[in-house]
Structure formats: structure tokens, C-alpha cells
Length: 360
Image 1 (cartoon, helix red, strand yellow):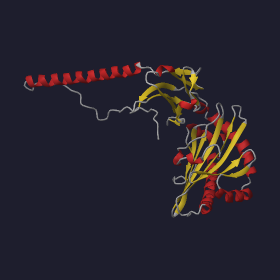
Image 2 (cartoon, rainbow, N blue to C red):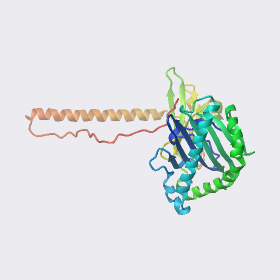
Image 3 (cartoon, helix red, strand yellow):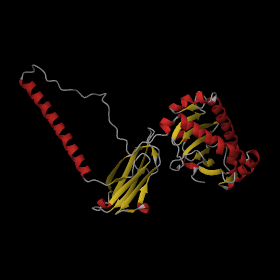
Image 4 (cartoon, one colour):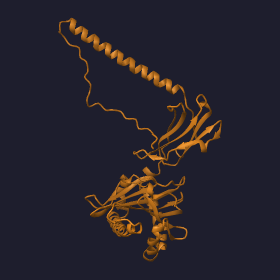
């Protein structure tokens, strides 16, 4: 399977498989979580390319599938009854999950009353001219691949021995061939419709803002980190070169991550010998850039921060002198008159620096 569904997290914080540059995709992620003594909680989210557009939570008061993108508010104009139909479909899916969660734990010699998860990802990917490229229908149990649809042969493939029981049952109850029309035709049609409705948000290109930073470890190891953020779509290439030669084996990457504001961020790091930083160049390629961007670590950037710090310290010292003079004048004027010193504003806004950080 291309990527483990165990990477999917609850509440819509999901790891999306990489798409091809210039391609478009639609994917629906669903998760069922068993609860001792109660019905499983079912959550479902839909993505077009890398943007969340719909969600469902069986714990919500409405018990309905709901829009999660502004452009989806207009979908009823294109397709009356859309939300009613989508809600009905997700409820049918939830019912099938309940049945699966009653049988699958037994295949693993587990108790059905314990906490377990059952997850599904389904969708399709299309080329820029909206030609079907590949389809997805994959399942995971307790964070591990369980069973998947092979969209070349349209047969079910068991990822673990315990899934053979499900494979045999589904070959009778859910013939894999029935999904061919949905993945290759219906899914492609909806990708095109969604892109037309949300083209201002989905078809835009935001170029990355980039910089190179230098970091020294406790034992003296030096690392250069190339950071890119504020870009969309998510496909981006960060490449480190030394003396013009690419260093793919020596580069540490983090996966492209959502920034929470509709854009993405990524970094690539390389260890260097102190004093040799000038030999390294970071090359950034993105759809929003007219040509590849090249960056190097600039030592003067550190000097800039020292200057900023010195100016800030000077301002603090000047403020202290002014306050001291004011107090001295009041004492020597017998308490007459006043010198106004602004009080600290308890409601002042505090700045925040959202940056890329390595996570364990």
C-alpha cells in the first residue's frame, strides 16, 4: 500500500498522500472509534487537493455532514439536496463500521468491548486535463494497514493474515468491481465540479517565503536549515547543494505540513563543517516561483539581530533615565505638579512567531 493509514489521526488532522505536480485529487477519510458500553464514534472529513471542504462527527448535535470551506456554501445551487444525500451516505458508512467493529476484533483474538479504531481512505487523483490517474480505497485497523482495493485488477488485497476473513466476505458482499465506476467516473466528475466552485481558493499559487538559518548543537555540530513557508499548493522541492552537487543522501527533511491558514511549510537540513557554510546552497522550486530560488546562509543576518538587540537595550535604558528624571523632579518640587508616565497596557497584543520546528 502506498502509505500506511496508521498515519491518519482523529479529528481531521490527517496525513495526506503526496500528489503529482499539477494533478488534482479528492479524498475522504473516515475513522470509527469504539467506546466501551456505547456506539462507536464516527468522524469523516473530505479534502480537495490539500484543502478541507466537508466534515461529519457522529457526536455533533446536528448529526449532519457540514461544509468546511466558504465555497462549499454554494454547492446546493449546483446540486440541490447535496447535503441531505451526503449525510445519508455517511450514516450508511457509520452503520457498516459498527458491523465491522463487531467482527474484526475476533480475528485478532481481541475483545470487541475494548477501544479499537477502524479507518478508511477513498478517493481519486486526476491529471491536469481531468483524466483519471489512480483511485484509492484503503482500510486500517488499530493504526495498521488492514485491507485495500487494488484498482488495477479491482480485487481486494489483505494486508495482514487476519484480513483474509474480511476479504472472503467482501468478495461476496462487496464485489470490488462495483467501485470502478465511482473511482474512475463519479469521483473524477466531482473533482472537476469542486475545482470550478472553489477555483479562487483551490487553483491559486502562493510562492514560498524562504530563509536559511544556522544552528549549533551542544557538541559543536553545525546544521544549516532551509525553511519554506506560506506556500500553496503543497508540492515543493528543497534541495541542498555543495559546490553545485546535490546532496540527497545527506539531507534531512520534514514532510510538508499545513500551517493552519491554508498554506504549507517545509524544511530541509544538512550538517556542515564550521567555516564551510559558504559552499552550500539551498535550491527551492515551486509552482508559484517564476524560476528556482537559491539561498545561502548570510552571516550578516546574525549581526542584524545583534544590532536590533542593541537598539532595544538602548531604548530601555533611555526609558529608565526619563522615568528617573521625572521622579527626581517631583521630589525636588515638593510633590507639586506631575509628570505622566504611561502605565503598562494589560490588554496589549502579544506577537507570535509561527515558524517551522523539528518534531520528534
